[in-house]
Image 1 (tube, protein in one colour):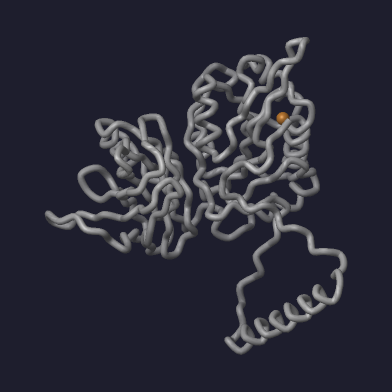
Image 2 (tube, rainbow, N blue to C red; image 1 turned 180 degrees about the vertical axis):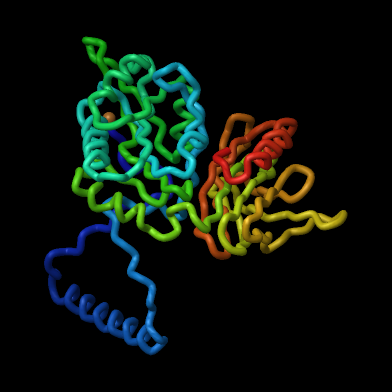
Amino acid sequence: MAIDAPPHPERAPEAPAPRSARGPFALITVAALLVAAVGVIAFLRDDGGDTRPPAPTWRGATVEPARSRPSFTLTGTDGQPYDFAARTAGQLTFLFFGYTNCPDVCPISMATLTQALHDLPGVGAQVVFVTTDPSRDTPERLQEWLGHFEGKVVGLTGTPEQLAAAQQAAGATVAIAEQPDAGGSYTVGHSAAMNVYTPDDLQHLSYPAGTVQSDWMADIPRILAQPGWNGAGSVRVTAAYASPGTGGAGAAYLSVTNTGGDDAIVGITSPDAAAAELHVTSGTTMREATELALPAGATVQLAPGGDHVMLSGLTRELAEGDTITLVVHFREAPATTVQAAVVSYDDLAGRMAQAADAPGGGS
Ligand SMILES: [Cu+2]
C-alpha cells in the first residue's frame, strides 16, 4: 500500500478542466477569462512576441523549486555500500521506496517503468529501489524480486535509521509498517512517488502511483530533451551542512559549482527558520549580503571561518543527525532545494574541504 500526498513541496498534477460550465455564473467566469486571455495574447504580440516554446505538460507532477539529487549511502544486494548521489550523478535516475511483499503499487510501478525503459531504445537510466521493509527484504529476497523486471534495477537496504534518513533526504514520507495480522503478515505504508532525477542532478518531476507505461513512453524522451535538464550550463549545490542550532539560531554552509554562465546566489530561504541571511566576510568585517557572485566555471563555498548562511528563528533545535531544508535562489538558474545535514562544528571544516576536493561531483 502507499501513502499519498507526502508533505513536501510538490505540486499535485493539475486538475482536469470541467467538462461543462455549470450555470450562468460559470459562463460569465469563462467569458471573463477568455477576454483576459485574449488581452494577454494581444499584449505579448504588441511586445514583439514571446518566442519561447510553451512549457510542456507532464504526466507527472512538477517539483518547484527543483530538489537536489539526495545524498545517502545504503547497502546493495551484493553487501557493498552504495553512495546514491555519487553512483548516479549526472545520469537520468528513477528512485522508488517500497517493499517486495507489496500487493500492488510497488510491483506495478516497477513493472511499468522498467518495461518503458526497455522499449525506449538508447535511453540510459539508473533505476534504484530502496526497501522500506528491511526485516523481510533480505538482500537475497530483493535481488530475486528485482530480477522479475526488465533491465538492471539496483536494490538497496540498510538499518531502519539509514532507510528513514534516505527517505527524508529524498523528501519522501517515511514508511510505516502496520500491525501484523493473526498470520503475522503486515503491509507497509510508503510514499508512492517515483522520483526522477535528471542529468543536472535535480528533481523536476515526481510521478504518482497509477503512472502507466504509455505515460513513461511519452514523458521520458521529452525529459531528456528538456533544455537545461541535461546537465550542461547549470548550477549545482554539491554540499550542504548546518551546525547544531540552539536558542533558535544556527549556521549553514554550502558548496556550489557553476558549470554555466555567470550567476549569483541571491537569497536563501528555509521552511524551518524564520529568516536565513547570507553573511559574507570581507577583510575583518562580517556583513549581510544581498547576493554572492557565482562566476562561470567556479566552485564557491560558504565554509566555516568565512561566509555562511545565518539561520534565525529556527522552528526546532538542530542536533547532530538532523537535517534542515534550505532553498537556494539564484539570479539565473532555477532555485534548488537541499537537505543540509547537521554535523558537529568540529566535523564541518573537514566535510566542506572534502566537497572542495570534488568540485562538480555528487557529495
Ligand atoms: Cu507498495
